[in-house]
Image (cartoon, rainbow, N blue to C red):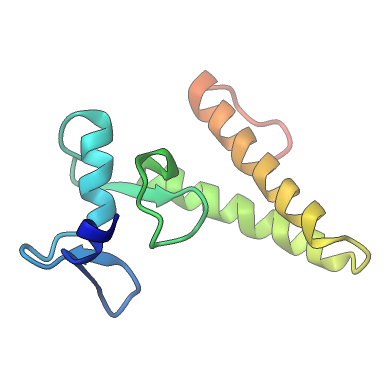
Length: 116
């Protein structure tokens, strides 16, 4: 990991980029994960929300619409949880994870979500 940190810099938006090419590190890692290139218009999503975590296991490749839908669901769910002041942070995190898992299952199975 020390070697890779010498080869990157963080841009003004907080994303790590390769010093030699200026390309985004997380897109490179996602391309390696799928064994090819990432098509134009596809978004590489950080599962944990941490832009500095570019491990392949933390990256999903989504269409723009799927990515927007995921974040909309997360915001909606977070707003509902924040209304209740009695919830613990652990409950909040686990609930957001359930939303993400539900989204993944919908993407994999292709089933429509009746709750939306």
